[in-house]
Image (tube, rainbow over all chains, first blue to last red; front, side, top):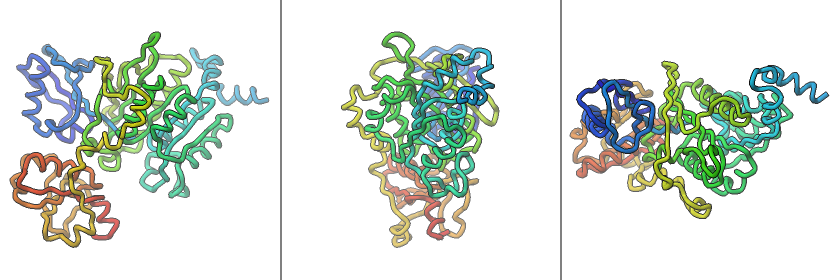
Length: 76
Length: 370
């Protein structure tokens, strides 16, 4: 199981802060699966962090890893 | 006499293990520029002045309003309508008159950065919009300044230290390494749209002050090449590591390019094609539009007296069929999310024409239409 966490205003779109998914081997697969589950995220801006590390390119994922969907924050 | 008073004032941190007179002297000789004296700026300024940072600059062009007071704790009801920086300076000097405070009661621009960043050791971003944030970040990178970043959203907030020297000729990541380009205008809501728990900027602003003091005095581990996200509802902190993938991260490469960049346009260009309608135009042409309230059901006041459809933005993509072949006028609380909705429908439903009501429900309230 891979744990997906949503931060900031992404939770307004997903209505949840956490979801578990399975049968994914890399972050591109994770992305496709999550957008299928929450189509509103398709037009949202965010970055992925795999086990607390920002990732830019497609990266392999292990069982039990945590992937955070991080949007930009602007308020002050 | 002065040194006795100074000892008494800072005694609790002077006796602190790992701090002492040496750290206090570093603060006394340090200078910090804080851009924004709102929700983040108020608490962080209070703590920087209280701690005895020698020289502080404050920039903000806003005036105090009643809706600021639940989180901007330097201001009172008597200050409504007055310049924030002037009131802030007055209050802060009452707390500690040994700190030298300069103020700019004007919108902070690229020229201000070029003219004044070098007068300060460290820059703090306490603004509330992406245009200012990218402008300040790019200037800090170009001019080689450490930047302490803070931002909030609803119950969460973020803190980071950007562009700090880590080796000879090498600086840590900056905001462009995290998000090279700003999000589309209206996509990420500010506090006036999304709301914010009053104490949240208090917590994040205080965390920013902590980072400033740590960097100036050299204590602890700063949030360098990292960004911390704090959740006030769970008290969970989530730190992610950032790294530089490319030097070309979207920032202007020279002061000239920087001065020629239009940051407002850069952060809002995608909505230029959306037609905004103000309430006067709408009142004349009411029958030509279907009014669609895209706020979530809990957002008040509802438009119960008016003929309208209620389709929350989060459901818009699955309910597009309710809007086909019509002129649609979207309305939200302040007119930002309605732009986003109009953009969405423009991309996905070419048979309809989408408009956004300028100023949203707040404008309807102001004109006593609801």
